Length: 355
Image (tube, rainbow, N blue to C red; front, side, top):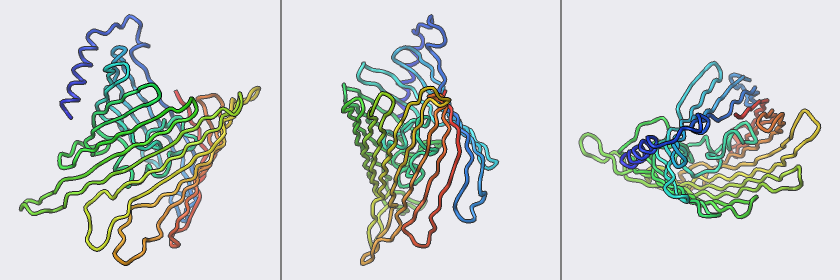
């Protein structure tokens, strides 16, 4: 993989040497991203703190070497409860080989999982779908170091990549089998998209210093499918629907005495984007999202599966001052199948600005 990355860097360097910068900096360098600030009121009993003011910024720095090659560095800044962090999350080069085929190398998002990969500046709620915070699905998606091919053939898109399997902010781990992922996207019409993908991870046998086996070999597979709808109801209103289903096998070695049940998640979003004239607002977008998640579970022989499903309901009213300037008023409700866990609702008031 490092040789493939080196090849892309070499080609990019040669391309840079022959680039024409006569068009000015605007054609070769750009900055884009979004900033959001919000006030959170937490509904869980005895939550500490009971409320907080938080801020977040995502900025992508894009340098275009020529019409076929560009590089991107993506950074995030977070401040919450008195804590502040700055991280470089994306760092990659992208090169167009032919008009229909390009190659990307570096650290970036694995293509599996719509909620992982949709633009943070276009989310209709404060946060992405809840499943993106869980280990069951972060193992198979999220950010990773790798090489990925993207092909676009009329209405069909294809992504195929191999990754180190270590996730973001970590060095490559040679003891982990590489992660392989593939995604097929079909733009059926201007307002309807279907997609399906698969991600595979694993680990070889691990030995301790004496040579004895410390962990057995294992492998796991995740499947993802989603549909996106942006249907024009009228000249000023669009119907928005997003539905996704994921299933992931247990990421770890087998155990004697039972079997692991796969984790599953599905979510569905419904909203209406309404344009407004002659008002201080340019549009409003009420939206709701229902999500159900079933975590990994080891079921012993002769025993019933535990009642541990989680249901999350997001709701939000987006008030667009301008198309890139949005006030969000909403909340997130948690419900638990486990009777020993109390459901709760978090509320928020946020402001997001895209640039």
